[in-house]
Amino acid sequence: MPDTTVDDVRIHFEALGEESAEPLVLIGGGATQLIDWRDEFCALLVAEGFRVIRFDHRDTGLSQRFGGGVDAVDGGYSVAEAAEDVLRVLDTLGIESAHLAGHSMGGIMAQYLAIDHPGRVRSMAILSAIPGLDPAYLAPSEIAAGEADPVPFPALPREEAIEQFVAYQRSMHVTAYEFDEDDEREHAARQIDRGYEPNGFQRHGAALRRADDRLERLRSVTVPTTVIHGRLDPQLRPLAAELTAEAIPGADLHIIEGMGHRLERDLWPDYVAMIAGNARRAKGHDHA
Image (tube, rainbow, N blue to C red; front, side):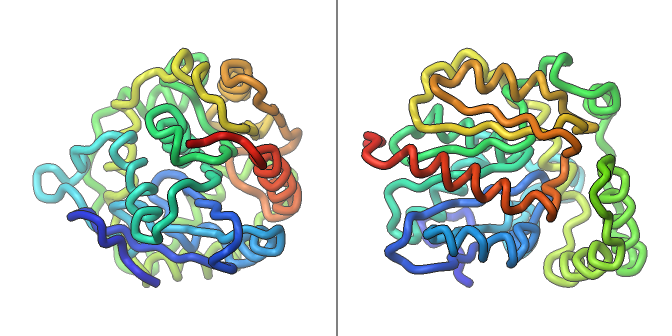
């Protein structure tokens, strides 16, 4: 798995599938590594004819770290700047444009790319994201978290860090779908062993708190777009998805009953169908 080579920001990434296939970049949520797009999910997308590209966000996994010392909780970058890491990956691969599928913070990054770099985007799937920081989009717990002063997260011993990861995922599990604790613990161990950065979440949060409102600018987006959101999302209200889809001309909206903020394994085939169906709408679309 290579790193970007186009400038002084180093992003670690992986490409799966045939080089000649349609490129699809998966953009994860805050503090996620490329392995958070599970292998089995990526295999479903490869089977749909995509060249799947996944990467470690800056401040996660094997990618470059920012901040540190007194700036441990703030990397000093914006979400729009972090979104340009996608372009660094594409440039390293020699790819002019790609389909995007972004979850949570990744969905916000996809929005910035479609607004600021429309020629690089073939289609866009926005999953569990918001178009700005209007309190109407946020659950009360998210409003309170955004108002609190960020504090550094200490590096925990391995087993404690694993349990912290599992506890967070459990707190996000608000659906009737199964919560496989053994799988979550095994996955958390892979994350910790691969690239533990306790303040990656805080640095991404600092960038998100600086993000501007994009709703009006999304009206200029012309690429085929699908917006997917869970009715039971405990962090971000479905209203955000409804207004996003309303703003983007021709966008499809899917509010999924029983889904929270996590991308549930039971729904993977549905997400793949929505992403692939939306990408097919881009055939012949002018994204130059």
